Image (cartoon, rainbow, N blue to C red; front, side, top):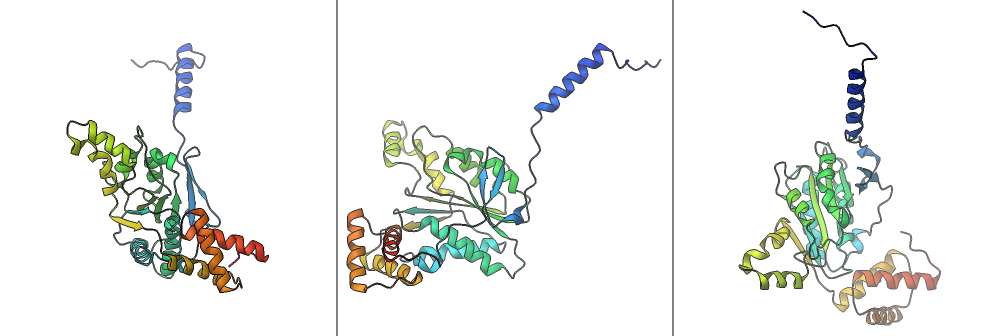
Length: 296
């Protein structure tokens, strides 16, 4: 015997509709459709759940990066292979401050686009993720997985302090987890620390552990997820001078070479370091005094 449908004003039907509406509101919003053709570079915004296009990337030309020839060639080769759809490694650029680690990542991205623009390789995108958003990496990977594009996910100045467990999200994305890292994604990071952890933190764990070797293995193994380790070291005086002269030639600054040499060396001495960053800061000061602009 069939039952008659509930009348539209039935209290039970009204309650069921109310529950259905509440469940619908609780449902997470659908992932936004990304227009990856909008730009060559993006910034990950986890609060919005999407990638924000960067119309113009703040880059230094590859030819202006001096004193890092070996690591430059290694990263360029790795990046170009990845852009062409070939296997490539995650890369950790570590070492001295101001020696062009982040500049090299951005320059390698631009060089790979140029070298593959006439090929059938998928378009290469650079995606910046901020250090404090590392825990949202799985969400970012979901957004990129399955796209026809290829992505370099880039985190500048990556490191972890005591009681910081967000490194586990990075480990899972790089090698672990059921899904693993998508084939169309590599992860590039820069850091002043080779193992991404402060030395005193590692020493404390080693000293208080029952088995010192195993105590820090989980955290130190994070850097092992990077197949390419590229070390940046302090430059010599000659390399520093060549950086300064290279910038001066590039921007068309005409200045007496002896005076340029003396001034830039004094500039480096007062700042306690010789590096590409220090060289560029001196050039900015020189250009201001000469009334010139730093336009290529």
